[in-house]
Amino acid sequence: MASSEEKERSDRRERAVMRLSPPDNAAVALRPLRAGETVMLDGVELPVKRNIPVGQKIAARAIEKGETVVKYNCPIGIAIVPIKPGEYLHAGNVEARYGSTLDP
Image 1 (cartoon, rainbow, N blue to C red):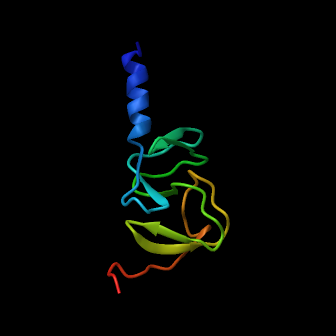
Image 2 (cartoon, rainbow, N blue to C red; image 1 turned 90 degrees about the vertical axis):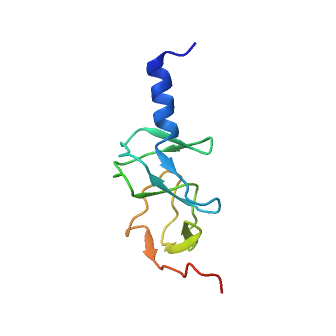
């Protein structure tokens, strides 16, 4: 049986990030993420390489150079380099290109 401390650590990992819409390849940090920790998203482990503030975006999966970055089912930018799962999404690896939230 898992100790309450182990359960709390597991719960904390589960609640660390959230995908806002199923097709999103970006997830949002629900709490500050620390470099070196691993968080879970939909049963997949995402290694965190640097500190990421609450509310900031991380890659929910691998994103290829030139691929559209999607948050809340809306395009928010284009990857300018390959991005690994769990990497911080920022101006250094994503060129902002916000798309319409309305269907054509």
